[in-house]
Amino acid sequence: MAVRSSWQGSISFGLVTIPVKLYTATNKKEYVFNQLCKNGHRIRYKKWCPVEDREVDYSEIKKGYEKIKDNYIVFEKDELQKIKLKTTKSVDIKEFIDFRQLSPD
Image (tube, rainbow, N blue to C red; front, side, top):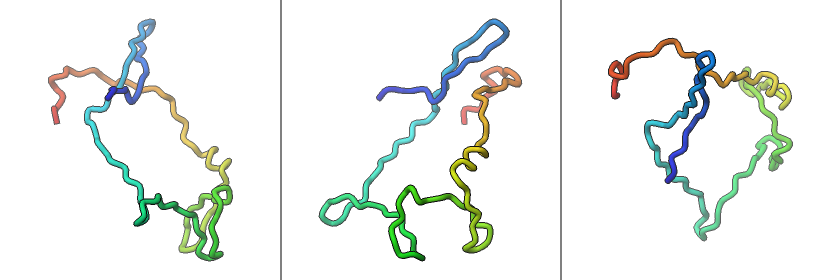
């Protein structure tokens, strides 16, 4: 199995740029199982509206925040895009330490 970096970037000090790759320190193995009926056919998941007693198409689904029980503030997709956090893709280095100061735990 090939080991891939989880992040790539660079550290810049004036005119000097050092390429950096970040790797995970642990390897987590997960097994993903599908749910099957007794005859071995994969089960589907339907989006169901219990009030209207019907299946809801993906294009009809909106996101909402429940302010009080059964009372929602509905957000449109463009509104959610506007409130997304802006990321800078930069890391600020505060100080360097000797590697012996790091705990192996």
